[in-house]
Length: 386
Ligand code: GCO
Ligand code: MN
Ligand code: MN
Ligand code: MN
Image (cartoon, rainbow, N blue to C red; front, side):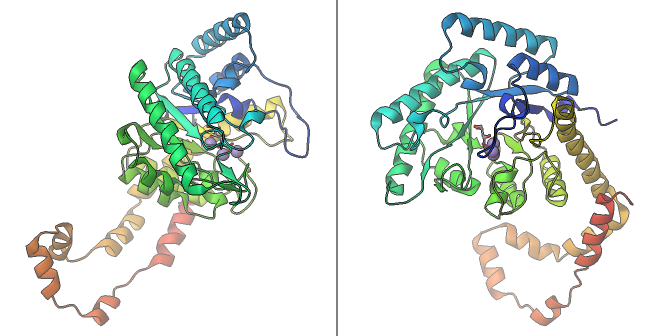
């Protein structure tokens, strides 16, 4: 049971399952896996596909011969595991040249190099059929605003995104760019810190239709925000091009835990909104196994992410069909249909009717909202006793 259903398009970044357990304080605890070994692991677990940064697949200093061999091995591994590559991205954070950002570096040559590196990552992704290109501004930020003018940084970001869109058109790649916000880490402050910032920023680009967002659970939780509400905004804007699923204790360092392992209730509501509104792009797990885990445990990590999603999708469906829960939902959402209709229109007639209507606020306040009951039933469903 809970075998991954391809309809969910579960994917893993090569860097997620391939994470070797290095952290700022400690050395790796697991051996390096090749891209092909990662494909075998997630393929065995039943994933739909894998994603990569340019340099997860091809080391930055690889020779032409090495590159060709890696591509050959990777292609074979994709094939034997029936894996797709729906998304590709670019590493603009590891190399020292990006120590003060890529698209927002002071140095125009660094900015141009970052754009060129992204062009090449787009070429690489296209070779493997990727149609979504994620842009996460790893080091686009500052520790102090004395260092960089944030107003100019926004303009530099726009210049880069416009160039990427132009390249996408010129090459006919048909990419949709998915912008990923993160509030802090690895910089003290990061520009476009939350998903909502990008939703607004997209409208200022030369090709807004090409750009959407790639929200990540942990990133909004690091900022203490409600992730599900960010997803609602992205869905409403028709801009949810991709999603990074993982988990994270609120307010802590960047933990990248297995999906659903820390905030099950939030994850339930997340799965519910994705399923209710028929999100249809890949569900990508951007997390890594605990540092203490070994290769065997990695398999639990990989399948655990997908199992939790499917179990929560099942719970969401039960919630939508649970008689007691739905009776409560019906009660709390019921209201005067004629007034609801007025509110839907901003016509002169609607404005006039609303302006002239009479309301009894005391009577309106009397409506019962049995929220304790509804939340408890929700929790009991989640705890498995309904
Ligand atoms: C992080 C980020 C990254 C990005 C990835 C794709 O916290 O490290 O979430 O994992 O998603 O680099 O661009
Ligand atoms: Mn992250
Ligand atoms: Mn991370
Ligand atoms: Mn991410």
